[in-house]
Length: 311
Ligand code: UDP
Ligand code: MG
Image 1 (cartoon, helix red, strand yellow):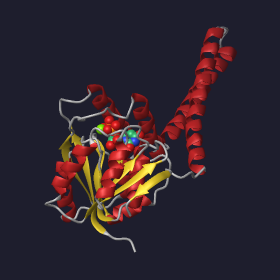
Image 2 (cartoon, rainbow, N blue to C red; image 1 turned 45 degrees about the vertical axis):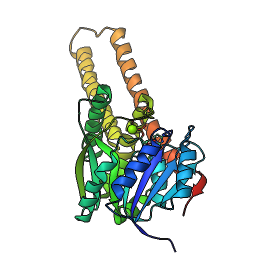
Image 3 (spheres, helix red, strand yellow; image 1 turned 180 degrees about the vertical axis):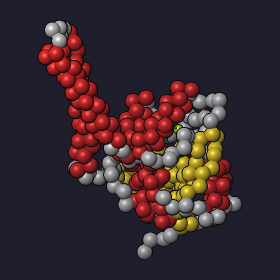
Image 4 (cartoon, helix red, strand yellow; image 1 turned 30 degrees about the vertical axis):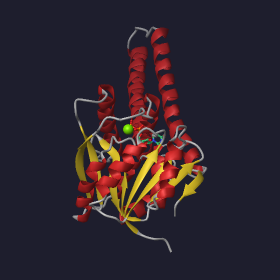
């Protein structure tokens, strides 16, 4: 029989050795007045620094800490999923381990939940600090994803949230490879509430999301939530076909009803290249979806566990 707890906190960790000691002490301080009945679930996602040593030491000396170590880096979404799979809490909080998600916000999350919310989301409050480029690209991304997917994600939605037991159990049922959790949580429904927070600076280490990783993550979001790109491609194809049909009528008219002749291999070549390019681009687009079907069809596990400490 597994022991239930009131609150689980899931923390994905990838090279956060410099942040863990402060994280542990700030979490303990915040949780003390809230509840005694909690568990911390730390997922070491292939760290190459001292993170696992710190996590396993903590887990050995504190029974409320559970530790899981992946066999390699599987990504933050996989780590969050592993945490969710382990969590026994009536409420589950997911947050970054780099202290950018301030532990001091936990009382407000829990207050909302105790007040009846089944999911409590957080939204980054736009402050002057932080990378301007990242903020701009994020804004464009949220416009696009909402447009394409029919989701209503607020700009600045973060992977810092509380899930009630029912929502968590529903989310556990999603075993797809492309895990855009923000979208999935939004899709779940339930009574969702939002609170704003200010992102703190990372005390130590740097962001694990390079521009390339961010772009891949954004594409995951769009392609796993929408077939609108395919529809747009089809619509554009029809449009070009209609235009060429009209043009054909025009050339026939010139040929039979005037004594002019239509000249120009340049325009023929231009049209040919245009259509050719369009076809290749749309093949690529279809390929993107096929690649994703292939990834999902393999049904590989989302993560591989190397070590585990605590029940
Ligand atoms: N993280 C992870 N695996 C990864 C990348 C990140 O477990 O492959 C963790 C990381 O340790 C942190 C959280 O996910 O606790 C958010 O990552 P990061 O701070 O690098 O992202 P950003 O704040 O730049 O969005
Ligand atoms: Mg961070």
